Image (tube, rainbow, N blue to C red):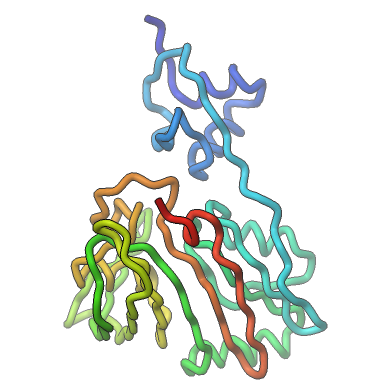
Length: 245
């Protein structure tokens, strides 16, 4: 049985460069059956059949001369969206796996004002997620978060070095041993929702980094609604959130 590095097999199979193949694996877009290929240099059978799942088109929810609101697909980097929209700058970021409302500013004056709104915690941020276990009552999580930024960012609860973080969780639906929850955050720490829910014993489905044992194509977290100044933006739930099986 012949084997080779995964990215080389993918490049050969799809007629693309090694560099492009490695990038697609690193971006989490390459699958073998239902399993995501995680390590570009892993040795793999040369007969392996790969599937590339490109993200769907980027949907513009709203734009005017100051702001543009995007319904970000999962598995797309926030910075890739910024690069794709001429003259726009991110006002905040969503994790690569997170779908939903993403806001960009279109002129310096507005961008500076909007970033100040985020810093002053005057932006309303609502999410929905599927989590492990049964959530049947509201939870308020007030645990300080410290982020380690060596390589891949990772956050921990740390009462000494952590920064204040506040998350409100409300149950919406229960299916088997999984719960759909509505989340509102008043702070915006790196991986805040993920680390807070994991700390509460309910990691987000598919979030292996923070302890989920359920395999999923992505971390099942969606930015459903944001309010800033007089604007309100809503992003429809994608199928994997609205019809979780």
